[in-house]
Length: 309
Image (cartoon, rainbow, N blue to C red):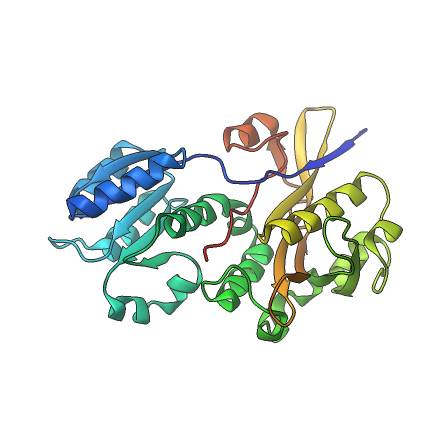
């Protein structure tokens, strides 16, 4: 069967439906205003029981944004767990003004799934963008492990420093992980392969370690890799890309998925990019219609939203 190759990138997550749950009217109004100002639809609930009824009535809700401490027998944590039973793809962002809750949930904070009050509007919106935009990483076990590890190393900052990132924590997926370094200043940056796992080398059909990307790569593959690297370096945010093949039967098959994650070296600007690459969707058939329904463009790509700072 004759196949044609195509790939693309999306710069930010699409708008979503957010359920805002808080018993404090002022906080709920403030959060709702922030959500709407960013182009999302906002639905309000005053407690866990009302929120649960709304979630049953609105299966299109993408994000549950809930206070942790609320009156009644259904606090924000229990609400999130209950909602996940019948909406497993639902994203949950907890907000709380209790330092002890934040301290006890350091893993959720590192993953961008808990935000301490008081917070600035831009902090809230970046958390929302991250959660709504990261579905591409969540659906792929290799990319999810690398992305979550990077988030933990960032510890709430826009990106971690290379010295703070220990590759031994990725031992199970190291063949799919590599490093790319920037060798020039923006906007004319060039990127060199510094370290690559064996699975990436096999996928590239050779070992380009030490070579500049635009000297080694060919065709549209070059534009995709270099374009993603430039976006990461210029905008200081993660990027997800995918390559797909569209067959004569109209079915799209994803072949390669990647996440590009920014790293500084000694602080300051982005000097290295952590890349994770997975080939596990090679034989999965996905209709163009189904992918377009998820908000993707050209049926093959998505984005990880900006990291909270």
